Length: 144
Length: 463
View 1 (cartoon, chains in turn yellow, orange):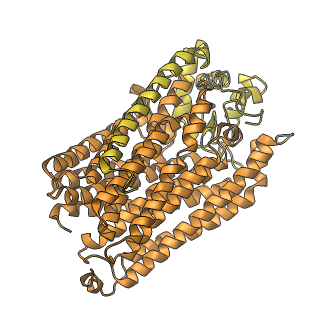
View 2 (cartoon, rainbow over the protein chains, first blue to last red; view 1 turned 60 degrees about the horizontal axis):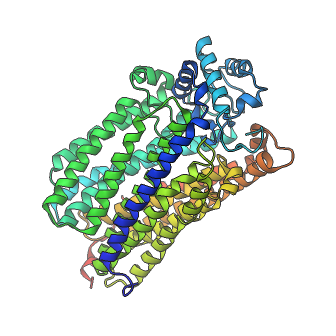
View 3 (cartoon, rainbow over the protein chains, first blue to last red; view 1 turned 120 degrees about the vertical axis):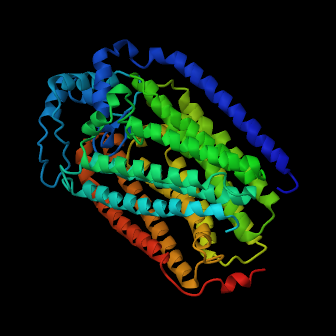
């Protein structure tokens, strides 16, 4: 390598290559931004859904669950929980509400978050909205 | 130590080691919760312990990076640090803010922490790795700016070396990209898209520059090989890292609502991401073999070589394992990801910080070039215990992941998440056992700093 490449050539490759690929990445980002309205279900992004995302965040749901495959791997995927629960926001609300405060002996159990009715409705709507994002047919099956 | 002001690195390194130990303790708690589901429930639910585990990792690595910068920048620039006082002040601010955050995670319900810190005013919390209250995020930015100012002024007034320049670009990138953590749109897809600009462009982007610069510095010092040669390699490695890694971000854009063409861009470029790590292995061994001096600090050289190998295995090989879109379709968000995450973070970033500490600590403690033979022997034992057990943690998680994918994702009759978790429990038990060995290695590592014995004798005999 000593003969093939000088240090200044290596430096130029670093700067030139980085700048070039940053520009390519920005161009792809631009194109993605234009394509997203057709995929990200923004037509259903209501105020309720936005409030539900805050419920999701303030209770750190991502600390156990995955959402579209991202998060922790301790508890089930929730990107498709709406469909897994039979397209029912009611079922989601009942599940969250019914978690035993002291847990289940020896087993993993979701904490009791004591959400209000409004918060429950919001998070359920957020999970419904998430399930309708076009995620390129992921997850592979209903089990997430 | 050539410059008095390098001494500010010492508290940073001590804090890094202490937080590393705390991180591993929480890792053991989490590992146990995987098999004994109600362990510490409901006092410390999994999500809270996990925040502590991952956030401590980030914070101790940042302490390590900053300590490394304070140590190596003056030596490279051949001048005293611009302001050691500022460095010490920022140390305490960062440590106290970090400690308060961790205490908040452990003792408060997360929703209460959000309320207490006024998340409603500017919501940024509750996203993986970026769980810090908004006010703490602002604090991180302030510390980063003060740190960059200090380092930047030092470089500006002194000799400009490639190592310093690359380190500075990496650190500026780290601080700059963190600003995306303040962008939290209602639109989940956009949120995820830019979340990766912090997470991916950190660990598979600018952090590799920091890693490369620290490794280059330690290799220059311990081998005595001509700086020109090492600097050229450094440029080659970081070129490869950014050329593959920037578009490689696409491997996170397969299934989050972004267009399908990312499956091509992401697969092709991220499949090339192991190349810079492979180059790093060749380079590290090549440089050490061509050494012009026998440096008495054998432990530091071991860490340096170990970093290259483990970064290649963890980030390179285990990353490649699940990076191609057709594979990732089945492995996305399973224990395969966890396996990769553990070895990549340990191999690339934990180990480079430990390399730097190993090299700098004897000098910071006034022992001369190296700690005593006995201390080094203890440290090398800890190296092998931690590194080998991390390999096993990774293998066991991979086993768990393969079974999980098979039972839950790939089979004709896919089973529910929790049903599958029950069936792969044995792997979690083995992971926890390997974790205990890792912890033993870590205890030995801490002890190695207190092992005495004659020092400096060999340093005089250097070529």
